[in-house]
Length: 220
Ligand SMILES: O=C(CO)COP(=O)(O)O
Ligand SMILES: [Zn+2]
Image (cartoon, rainbow, N blue to C red):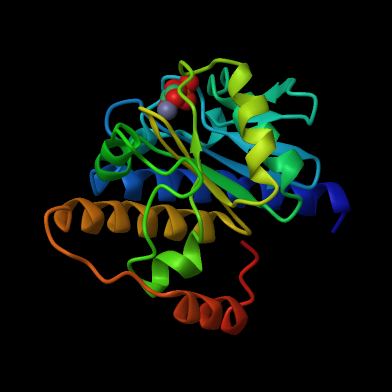
């Protein structure tokens, strides 16, 4: 079989994967209306969900394919956050996929006054530390503002996930599955954080975090 046919088959599998994770996120209430976008890195460019598309009802053939200059190769007009995804990929060579959502609890935290800009959520659970680590806040920009790319560039080298102020999370992973799992872990931790707001809590301490970093080779 020729390399071109193999690459085509791989691209089609990634298109189907975007559709199926998009539907799953939508059906569980993690992406309302036409909010959010999903991208996946390919050998010869990358795939990104179309702008104004509902993640629950994507058509694999209409998912946009872009080159690394941001030019549309095939599919529908891409998400207005294309440059944001591209900035994250350029800073994180190991990132194979990126998920951006407006999931309620993460979005709620992104609107809170007095957040620590370097680390928006406490290390409440081991899985949060393992999947997210430290979560910096990106100052508010309107959706689609190209300046967001620069703001992300400064943080993405050190962080696989960031929280956009008054907006929602952007999470990368080695695969789309990994990026989705990390996004879900962030959403659950944001929910736990909000549930515990009036309750004295006992986050993981430095020794516990250091043990996780060493056991799971975490690089934050
Ligand atoms: O989440 C969104 C904007 O931040 C959705 O925008 P798009 O529909 O252009 O992907
Ligand atoms: Zn958004």
